[in-house]
Each structure stands twice: as C-alpha cells, then as structure tokens.
Length: 536
Image 1 (cartoon, helix red, strand yellow):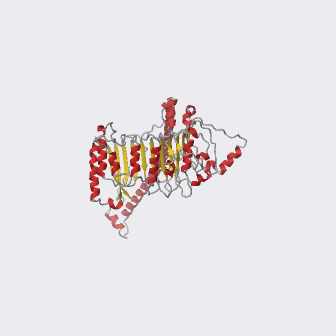
Image 2 (image 1 turned 135 degrees about the vertical axis):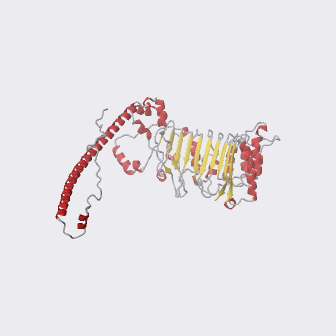
Image 3 (image 1 turned 120 degrees about the vertical axis):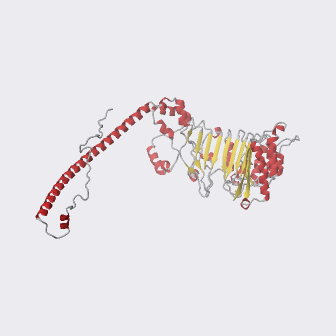
C-alpha cells in the first residue's frame, strides 16, 4: 500500500520555515557609553544643543528597533500558529496510520484464523480436548477452621454448552460422542430454583406434559443438596432414567435410599460424605449405610463418612450381617461425638470376603483418639470374612489393643501396605515387633508380602527392636523359605510431649542414635523417613 505521508525535514535550507535565526542581544547594548551623557543621566544639569541632538537620534533609532521587533514577533507568532496547525494535522495523520495498522493486523489475524490447524483436527482429537473442559463432580472442600460449618463449594460453568455454540464442526463433535455427557453437574441455587423462579416456570409450563428424561450415557452422578432440612420433605424422587449409572456420590444426604429412586443394584462405586454441623446431622447413620450396602448388590468400592450411632429404636429387624460379596475397597471416616462409635457399629455388621483395601480415619475433628473397640471390630470383620485377600490396611487417629493388632497380622498374611498413624502407646508392643522380625531358624514369617510400613503416634516400644525388625526385613528377606518380599518403605513419626521437645533427655538422644543406624538401609535403596511431632 502506498502512502501520502512522506514529509521529512529539509537539510541545508536557511529559509524561515526550516531554520529559525537565533537572536542574541548583549545586555549592555543600550547603555550610555559617552561619559558626558552618562554624567547628565546622574545629574540635573541642562544638556548642550549637541547632546540634545545626539539623544534625539538615539531615541529615533530605538523606536525603529521596537518597530522591527514588533514585526519580527508578529511573524514568529504567525509561524507558531502555523506550526501548531501542522502538528495538529500530523497528529491526526498519526492516528489515521495507527487505525489503518490495526485494521491490517486484524485482517492478518482473520486470515491466519482461516489457516488455523485446529480446523483440520479430527473429531477424535477434539473429543479429547473437550473432555478436559468437563469438571466432575463439583469441586468442594471442608473449611480450613473448625469454627466454620458446611462446605466451600466452587461450581464450574457448563463448558460443553459454550463449546457446542462455537461452530458447526464443534457442535457436531460435542453431540456425536455420548461419553462427553456421561457426567453431569446440576446446579440448584436460589436464583434458578427459588420460589420466584419456580413460580414463573410453572406458570409457563402448565400446558406442557412432564418431562420423561433418559440419560443413557450417564455413568457417574453426584447429588449435593444445599438445604439438608428441606430434603427431609422429599421421598422417592425419580430424577431420570440412567441405565448405565455405575458411580454414585452423595454429599450431606442423610437417607439416600429414602430420598431418591435410582438403579441402586447396578452401582459399583458409592461415596457418601458429609460436613459437620452443630444443629443437625448431615450424613447417614450406620443402619442407613448398611441398608445402602445391602441394596447395592454389585458394590465394589465404598467410601463412607459417619457421624452418630443409630438410635436403638430405629433398628427394625434388618437382616444382619450384611454380606458385600464383591466389595474390594472400603474407606471409612467419622466425625467424633462423645460416646458415639458409629464406625464400630457399622463394621460389626459387615462381611467382606473380597476386601483388598481397607482404610479407616477416626473422628478427625477430635483431639481424643477413637476407642480401641473400633479396631477390635476391624479385627472381627477380617476374621469372619473368610480367607483374607486384604493387601492394604490404613488406620488413623485411634487406639488399638496390642493383641488385636498382632492377631490381624497373623490373620492377614496377604498384607502389603500397613499404615498405623496417630495411634496410642498401647498399639505396638515389643512383642509385635519381635513377631515381625525375620529369623533364620525356619520360623514362619509374619506378613511375608509386607512392603510399606508407616507408623506414627505415641511410641513406647524399644527402638532397637524396631530397628532390628526393619533391618531383618531388608537383609534376610531372600534367606526365607519361601522367599519373603523385601521391605521397601518405612516411615516412623514419634509424637513427643511439648516439655520433652526443647531439651532431649539421655534416653531420647539414645533413641535417635539407634534409629540413625537405618541410614545404611537408606543408602542401599530403602525409602526410610524418620521424624518427630510435638503434641499440643
């Protein structure tokens, strides 16, 4: 494109348009240099006729100079105004150039967009990209402080509806792959489901038949009511048909079987979580959980958080214990309430012959640990569930009798991953550690597949016996018959009282020295982590 804006300053030109003459006026050029005239200026004497003529000639010359200065000033003012006009026109030209530049840049972007390789992406690649835009389930988290109640909820926007409106190709891809719609978040707020909104919608839809909704691709559903009390007024809600539903999450739902009509028997993964509220329970009690697990005949993975025990009058002749034949993963947690042991109540009525992973986190909101009765119930569950398959056992923030723990280790030789964290001082004894120590006298080793061992809490056992046990499972594993799996990861965190943390006594110094001998195992490849924690 050509341009008419080709002005540039002249060089070597002396005209007033391009070369302004500098005016340098000496400060004493109008002083009286004649001594006689200077004398008259400082006295009141009468000037002579010759002096009068000289002075009048000077005045006439000065008046001519003033007229010349006025004319020069007028020309310069006109020149300045002319330059201002030129500057104004030049600024307008600069703006026009910038606008034209932006217009050309936009044209380049538009044409590059047509050449964008995204237009050539196959539908399968677009599917993978679009799948990353779906967020399920709705992100939520518990408040950071105990004083806050409820949940911190961060509902995402429905990106699929935005994507399908971009272009015809994207619309086709979004609606051609049903798996994009296999997980759906339904957000119900006061804005879209309050009394006013529902009343307006109802008045518009009086003549429209009720919607018979089927979601054939839906395999994961999350139900998260924001008004727990209001849910008590609803029973048997038939939301939609979902013949492919497999994963079910409920948050703050006290009685899911009572509230919702869903294909419970086909669900394989069930999660029930609840926040802690001061005025009312928000999650199911053990009886409700047992009924749900009994209903879910294909249940393979279950995550439950409990609060209170079941009131005695609520038991109504349920068939107990509940046998979950296919359950492989069971994760339990609880909110702590004084004299309530909901975990024990639930575990006492379960049989899980296929269980491989069992995780229990007790009363996370209490400083006081769970009663040893709960771990006794865990022992009972593992014993009555038949030949053990369990490989992972995690138990956190609870008490345990040493005979119960030792019996679990004897009952479950398949254990590979054991976490006993934030436990009391009576759980692990010297005898238990001696039983875990490998020997070369032909004694049958305990838990021969053990690979990961995490222990934390109040420790009263002899640390030398602990070190001997760890070293034996590292150095003597190959010498066993049949061979024993080598211990690969050890984490030990000893809880100390605050008064013992500042100045370690001689016994503590000795314990630290003994534990440091495990550095040899660390250098040889074992993952060893040793630490302490000060109890508040």
